[in-house]
Image 1 (cartoon, rainbow, N blue to C red):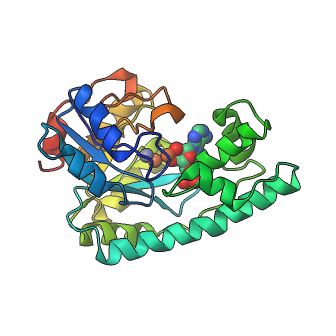
Image 2 (tube, helix red, strand yellow):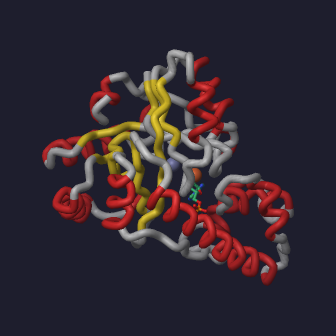
Image 3 (cartoon, protein in one colour):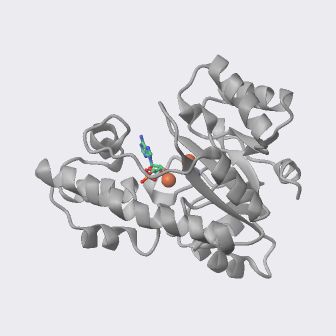
Length: 275
Ligand code: AMP
Ligand code: FE
Ligand code: FE
Ligand code: ZN
């Protein structure tokens, strides 16, 4: 079993990078990609925790791409170099998040749920801070009972506290990932919220641009829909990946090494990314 999509405390996961590696070993995984939002800061810790164990740690990252109506996330998998332009771009996104988080906190204050940047930082720790951490603040303020309710009521796209994030353009993000020696893979494409026809033409564009793969299997999608995405991706010659998008306690429905339909992610997915 393997997993090509996971998060640690370096972004909005609840496990530290080393605890995540520990859990992956406990579950008998042979490979795990750590793909934190806008950050590769957890990778050194995860790599040292995996050293001398049967677990192969795959260096990854997940970034958001400017898009509407839904959300567009791009995975960089099998990164070879973490410095250079990748480090620079992620640093910029990190600082842009501060500005955006400040705007969300302004909206919250106007609605009577005041919280400071320091309080947000305390929830997020050193990692990239974002809406999941703000959702936790809204639970603390008793504005909602659960983080999911915080998203549904206030934080999701189109809801009153939503603020757009500074995003990369797809071509730039792809160039940065490939420049770091990685593969550019479109994450959970059904979160784009486009029709099947539109998804097909987008895939054609991505192929022409040089995108390497599609994460066809993701736990938020129905297995039948995942197979349909897989078929579309294969017809166009993409690599096909699968992940759990594990976040730990904040999304308890997600299980390491398992994807849509609770399907175990087999070792054959390593070959998909050339390992
Ligand atoms: P941000 O990067 O700050 O915009 O936060 C995005 C993260 O919030 C995603 O990676 C998910 O972990 C979480 N998220 C986004 N939309 C939802 C939603 N509708 N319900 C629950 N969690 C969500
Ligand atoms: Fe997340
Ligand atoms: Fe994502
Ligand atoms: Zn993710």
